[in-house]
Image (cartoon, rainbow, N blue to C red; front, side, top):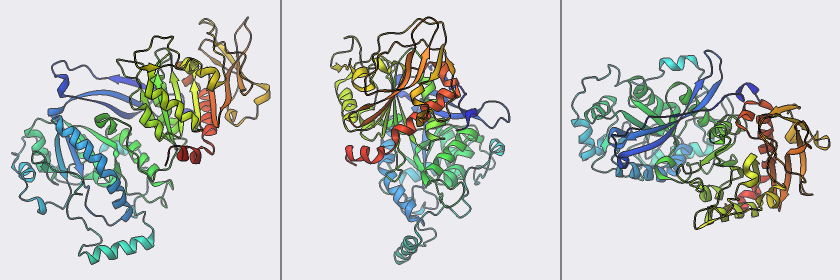
Length: 538
């Protein structure tokens, strides 16, 4: 684990409220990017920016979602991607967003379609970029970085025997096995009010005709066409459009047998990170259609669901950064961050649905009464034997002291029942807590590489005595008071549980604390995949 990545502070930026836009016409997005912490430092911090876009000034460009491909695995992934993508298009279209279908080299079947004629009829824009008709292989900002994957073999990841058989089938169908596409995949419905074009010139003209400054790119393949086409991310970014990639509605052409020798899906993540650093921000499809972000069935990396709803310690800022930089980048996991509703902290949208697919639940919640169905989903998740990691105020996560909304439910004994704790308040703010290793747990794997003692700015929680099933790992002390456990493990049925009363915003600047949390997630997930998938019916 590289400690230089762990001391950065997540910056949440909020766009100014555009009061002249009616709320019904606003698309609210959270755009993720990465900024270098200092010139030539080589380290980046994650930034999430709240974006409000006028739907009438926004377009979605669907890149090369073809009906066939020379790579059979690419066909399979497009087939899996398309139904969710069509939901995105339907939702955006209903809100007044222009949908541009761009299946390159497939214009002839659409010659008489109103959507094709619409793109052709757009007048020449006064600001037409001189090279908007060309493929773009790099923009100046990318010169500062190293391209993250080797795609010199074309990115084919088929089994050789399957690949040979697939090409024989394509030839028998009268298609060129090297370029078998004829149309866009028919799962994506094209409406008369849409546009169809594979021309950078036509698409630019159409965007300018309609006063469109905001562009969402989705489709395939991120490392090739989505980035490089005349209507792709690079051309849109360098020519001044506010462009984002919908990062869960895309795929790469990457062969895991080439550098950096990671899974296909991790290869996609690396390209997304490159884009966020040097080209443009990214968003996810759930921001338009709800639920959780899309993931491919073949992406078997464990999924961590982070449920966040507390107002004391800024974990709405620190945990998304931890999720990206530690869980995803360093540990190779998938992370789904669920934030509380901004108008009602007792509601965490998408929680029940996300828990169905979760391999680990990470809780940072304070005194919330969840909707009854959501709390039932938490109970069901734990009853299935899947693991839990919880921090700071999670000791009183579901104890709203009877102040929850009607129809919501509480679990006031969650701390002793599940965490094995005995929370009864905390000492006052002021003295720093000195954190040391429990003498009985020095060799516990969660403490591997965690250097103690260290200090925490958070007030020391009163939690003694722990349940007999709990094993203390770290203890905290302040002058004049008894020492208290500040991190421990427990068992709840078959679920592995880790809890720490640490988690003050300053703790996330301490590489020892961040390492502790990363280790805890790894420990909790050991042997958890088969249990979680069986329990979830998958």
